[in-house]
Length: 401
Image (cartoon, rainbow, N blue to C red; front, top):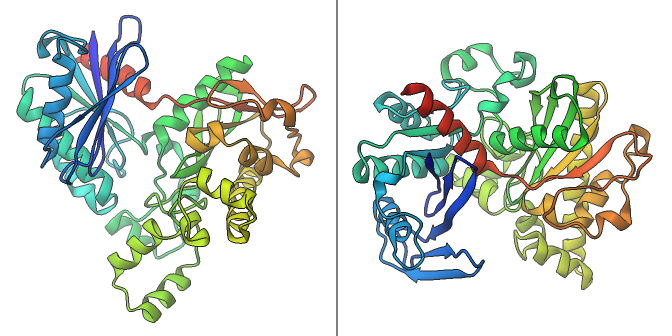
């Protein structure tokens, strides 16, 4: 079975085509700048090189069409006919409380995703465009939605509810949903395989630290708490998102700056976090370089960033009643050695001891970075959200036959 995985953002499409008989990647790449000038697709070739092709891409339909064209290309494509693609799997950021597991797409699912755009306007709108583009270009091919928040649906009500009048939850579904669930699911299961732990008897803290970042407490394979909230704005300090903030600070700033609700949301999502503190960049590599050159605000941003991660690890160790393993994943978590070291510094009382020399050598590969005598194992596990989406897609489509 061949499964195409699509991750459609507001102006981008990442794709991977899998042969699910052996889970090999047949083709992969990404479309960027949809609806903007200088749009292009970048295709990863079998020899590891990347080929970039400029294109006019006014909508996601043209973007998906270009992906198909590249998959069929006689020079660097992977298939001879689109009929070889048995199913398409989509990453969907927000499934609200309507979906706690992956589903095959039908008109009702599309309608539900559209209704949930209020909770994730940037993400869900992009996903929906991707689904409808495939609808138009491959109308008979089954599609599957894998929801980012589904893995977090096991949280108990005392963890996901906000302390506001209960009728607001009943009427508007205001609650903590959590995100990056597909990544937390993959790494929490993979770390148990690496360490020889029984998933059903494990206490894992997963730290997905990328430009967006979240932490989850996973008890016996099920999430009991996570740092993101109703939207992906809550929790850790992120590249351009503020993370946890006093709600009164938000209303105070709206008054002082004369901002409307959506303008304020954009301000906290796109101009805050590491970017807001440094005034330099939302990219941690740029910030680390600036800090090494003596930039005080860059140093401050790194201290704030690492401190928040540490605080959540401590809180979730308490929520879990102890911890067997702490996992770092995603762009920053897999590659920024200083972030991992500082986030774990001072947690020796919990049984967490980082092997500084080992940690300093690990970039984007599976490795245990704690000392041999560390009671709690600290592990780097590169995430693979796409294979989770592909597996769910294969399973659901085969069941439906």
